[in-house]
Length: 609
Image (cartoon, rainbow, N blue to C red; front, side, top):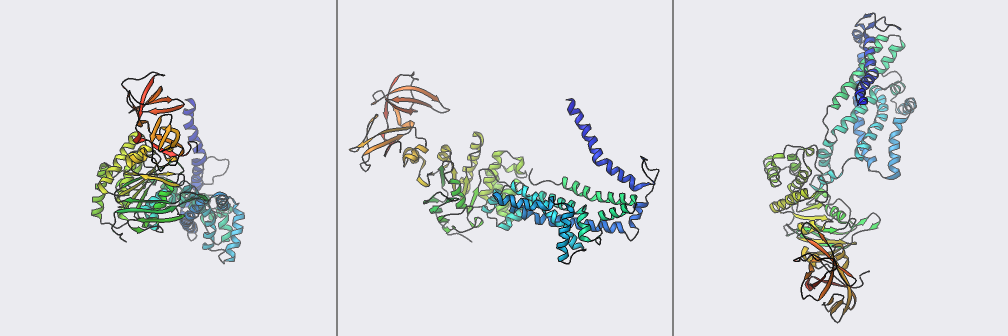
């Protein structure tokens, strides 16, 4: 605690010595008469130096104006030019990225005299040596270096998915720039202006060498007064040098940041035909084909890395295709940019525009289409009421909870009126309470506004609850597309069954239209080839029966929130069952079981293949 008590006075003393004391000495020096070492206080005071600012043709005032004009122009141009350079650098990869950042750092790190000499030769060849334009160009070189490096850092951490989502809401690249990116860049642009301003304002070496003494700026006038022994005038000029940076820095510190043609009528909202996608140089999905009806919810279910998100981005126009066709609302959209497709893509994390209120976020897709204000207000209020956020319309995104942000993002997506709403893992990052909240909002919005939904997830429960149909991505193909109950009860392949986590696998043989195994005999389709085979079935396919043909030995049980799962053995087989029992058996007890043959799927082939 003692150290904490001492910290504040130590910091105050340090601030006084480093900042306040020099300014106080300059003020005394500008007012003091006949003040020489070792005197600690001027013997007399005069305002001659301040009144003298206007003498000699306003030499000091003229220099002040020249410096101010150069600094303002350097700040503005440095910010405007540093932005695209920094963004370009942030988008580079590997050694090219490091090389580009190093090139931007050179004018910042180079000794001022060396930089000034090189620039003097450059502007001399242009006939601009000794001119204000030449000095401005020389100031811009280090200023752009500073601002490019600053924007490099800004865009390295910039969430570009916000721009992607704006495009899928229908915004053109220019609308994305002016309505989304630029408002979010207000503070960075202001700070880049300050950087460029400060680089130019106190510049001596570049001004002196490139300007050749003919462009008189305030730092040069201060230097000239010091050489002439006129310390009071030099101190006055130095104080003038301090004032604009303090005003610029003070103004910037109080600035609030941004971060803190018609389609044919058809019942088919989306058709994907023989779609192929590559992951860099590696093969990805191939031959993916499916339709989505208007108002239908299709869930694409797959493991991490199966390509489901890339497939969704390809439909939205955000990722390239290797082959295939996409139709949206009966219109070919394979080669259309994202903003011209009748889809909206929602990222897993809500990409709300931080500079806009909840109302303006939802209104965004309506405003960029030029919808009349009365309709904008009516539509937005209806949407916000649908997701129970009517009273939050004036809040900014940072003032909302996680579930509320998800609901705003859903409302904004529906406001765009897409034929297809594409959702990337919409519930994956949410706790159980928020999952129910967002799931309810999603279903309510679809019930009210009827967009077709394509949802990707790796979660079996989400797929079962949200999907009218489920498309299962296994390997590099769409392995099965069907209603949830068919998918879970009758998987198309053994790989599909294993992905779904089907509880029981029983090896056996197919012979004479029967599947023979430890559990007995089951009839199978005669089209299945004879030989080794595997039967799969869920834990709910086994039921307790006093006269059941299967004798099992009870091993253990696991209590879940809604059911009890029991582990059993039949010979060398281990099975699981969720059937209800009148009493809980003890380990080693024998139980009689029956198997519901309608819930068993048999696949020819060995279980270990």
